[in-house]
Image (cartoon, rainbow, N blue to C red; front, side):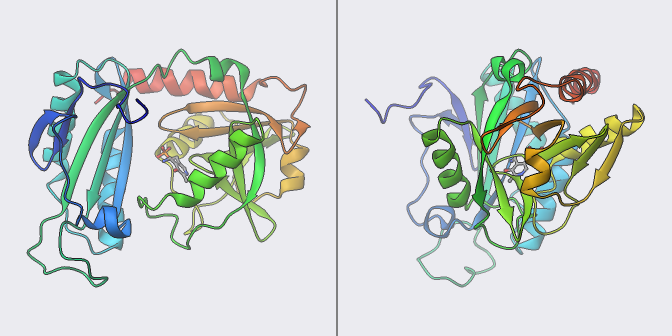
Length: 291
Ligand code: PMP
């Protein structure tokens, strides 16, 4: 029973074909499977339309370029395929997952011949994004050492470190882990991390150490418009524990308050004022700019 997928009736996309998820096939020689030699994107869907997808496509191109990987199609064609998947699955609210790998070739570390096409796979996931019990309650996080590789700005499918971090959090009865490297928080296991102190929002500056979150960019821009002061700098675990407020952002959560860090209650242990406000503004802005 454990191997039966959650939704057998889904239509998924595999290299130009729209097929039932039970019929979809990928070679065991796919380099994504053998080497995690691939990149991905997750775009959110509201009211059957994409949120900030042009930015996701731009980041996909950047990830592909950084790894010298062939684009499987133009951003325009990929977006058209995403929209067809939304239609065929009657997806109202949720996510489109997209993965590109360096294609199929006999197992050998070096790149395959230049005419080997990339693999492109996409599937929808239905999920309530706007109405979310977790947004009301907030999440609790633990600290974990950041053991990921040095190019976290590339959105690769090699996600074993976040898998272990999420599992450790779950085993500790919490929802996520904030990753720590050289005495500073980098980000959450699958999201960007923020604290609020004395009315100022603090989040780590962009570099190779973190993923350049699409939601991060949007939330920082919106906070600026509202004259909320955002400081982009690294912060320490101690600063996090002593923050007035904390939150995370990602395409699948938008903005979630963080109410406990490493066993310390943040504020009074309930979502503060700024994170719920940013969430509200983010959703309003997303709904006004659906693609
Ligand atoms: N950091 C990491 C490590 C992530 O995996 C994600 C989500 N994939 C994010 C940040 C948030 O990025 P985005 O807002 O583009 O979803």
